[in-house]
Length: 529
Image (tube, rainbow, N blue to C red; front, side, top):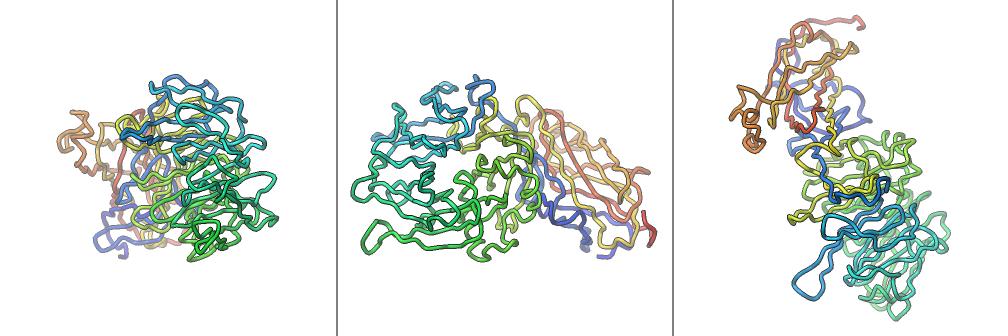
């Protein structure tokens, strides 16, 4: 709809953070004044509701009140359940930090069960035959086993593998430095027998300039990823070393080098992986489009992934799916930084392509894992660089007693015509209120100085149930409140407007479902601002 008279425009959110879609959007409001903004310039420390509304990410609570060490780097986490032979299964949360393997002591702390390992090793956990198998990529270290009672070298003379996964009643393993393209498998149902009948190995394009960097069991096949230079993916079909259903290698694609085992992730009906250049892919999209850039899951933020990450440290990154929330979290190192100081969130719900992305800067976690808490709920946990394991998504909206800063910025909006100058007169945020706190609302006309208003609060006397007086988020759980402010002379004139809203108040939650603005056209102009 052409903007010819004053109109109230209601902006909704049609996409997530994108660095590669440009700084502006030229779409016009429809006949009802609705404008779906297809991407965001900034989406910091937020996730997305199903209608696309940004919501501040939850805070954290410490699992272990006493750190394993004040400067320990927790680079591995795992939720180990042992079924046993009774109706009662037992849980041990495992952590790997500075060359020491820890198991939780059942009282909110950790006990060392294996020391003397390399602090720089990239860890891998898998479970088979009720045994937790632990390994790293450090040359000379042998795989370990732990049954919640005894920790020892993995029995049966296994190869010195770096990572493993279960598939077709076997453990498959790879990452042996002296034979980088060899895939090993144990005897059926016995992860401690690697030499008996039924065990063996498969060479995957040896001496092709790459090594096996990851394994995943998916859709009745074992997927073998090679990298980190040229890149290739292979399927292992079959169920046994010989016979009518013998193992066979089927090449899948070449040209996309995976980076490591810990950045393989299952989500929905697909299997994702990160490449050595930082881009994120899936098997389904790769099968359909190959290495065509448009098939990348990380397409909206590819420039960021390629230029703003420390690619030399990506082997220490982890990617974990949170199926209850419909997103995958990646803990990653920024350029010039050694530690994983950023989390990227990929929301894959509703089949949106490309997925919605957001950037969580409030957390520095060396590892991520889904672990069941004392209430029986699977919650994402992060391993800090302070010897502490943190449960995420806490309602406190704080991390280590510090505030979490949510910041969302829209692209510059011309409302359909950059030739028309416009006056901004009023604005509103459609909020689900949680408290009485002020919300920072900012706008920028063209390239002028950004203007800021803090007169918008999450609620007040006009808020249904007055949730701020009662100070109860639960009472406001079904409340939606548009919060208005007049802008007067500060609104300004321009061809386009860039909107931003933020919240940095300690413990404060913020959930925004739309942004409204009264805009009046003032005529055509060919003058440069």
